Image (cartoon, rainbow, N blue to C red; front, side, top):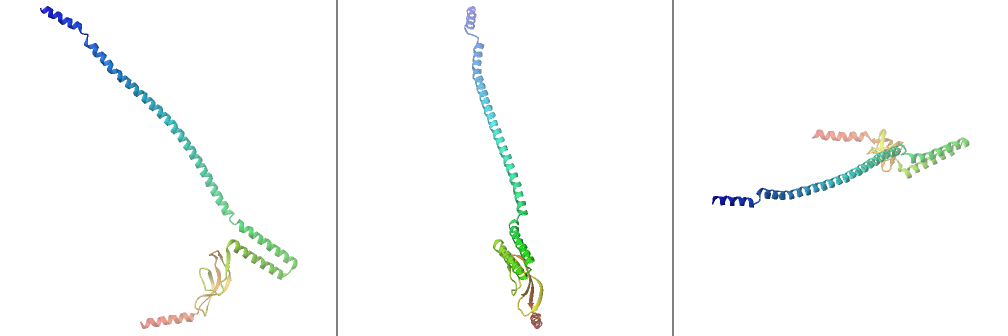
Length: 221
């Protein structure tokens, strides 16, 4: 009977395939999806790399374009700056072109007056010619350039417009101009040159009487 049991156990062993082979097949089946996933990840990485390389090419082209634009703008700015300096120098050097052109015409008139006087030897004609040129010049300067003369005789002394070179005491309450040595000029509303004048100051007697009254008042106090 023991022999039969032994035989039956051997038959059971022989009837079942080795479990090792079955487990090995299952392991291969489990490894197959892992390889597919690795291949898919590798493909995605390649795609991302290609996208990144394409993006780098685009950015490099953009950087090159911006650099070119910057260099052009810089060159334009340098040219503009040089042109501004050149225009400024020209403006300073030739700022008086217009007025000098007009004054050359006045000089021509003086030349004609001198030539005429040498021929005719007529003082009155020379005087009239010079006076006409003077009036013409003053009119030109006033109408075209805003230059005008102002009279000071008999007006109150104004330090903003007058320069007192002489003074005297007189019967007046405020400083008054009694003589004008050099005319004053204005350029529009600004004094271009002060007039040189002689000023009549209030009499000393009035100043002394005022001072004595003040002294007496102080002593009584």
